[in-house]
Length: 85
Image 1 (spheres, rainbow, N blue to C red):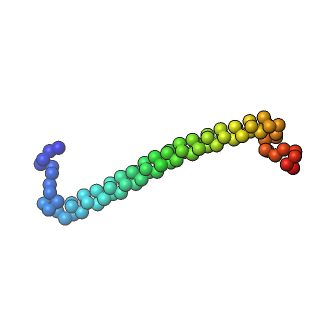
Image 2: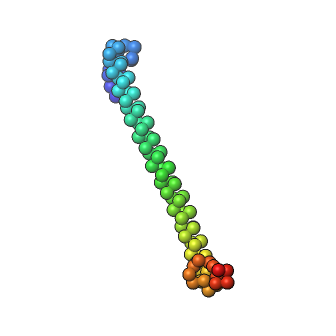
Image 3: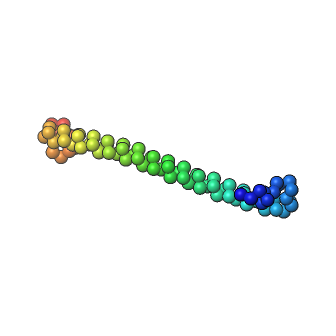
């Protein structure tokens, strides 16, 4: 960067200082919103992964339960025998 282009704020005109400050504030807001969006995407991705793992384990548990019911002669999968009705 060229040192001749660098001007301290106290050496600038008030209008130029105000313009640059406003521009910096707008960019700061854009960056904060962008970071918040990235954070939300990361959280949603993590949550999806966790829920997918939980769902897979529940499906596996259901399949084991269903298999046990069939072995016991409860082919309907309801887990209730004729004697219990």
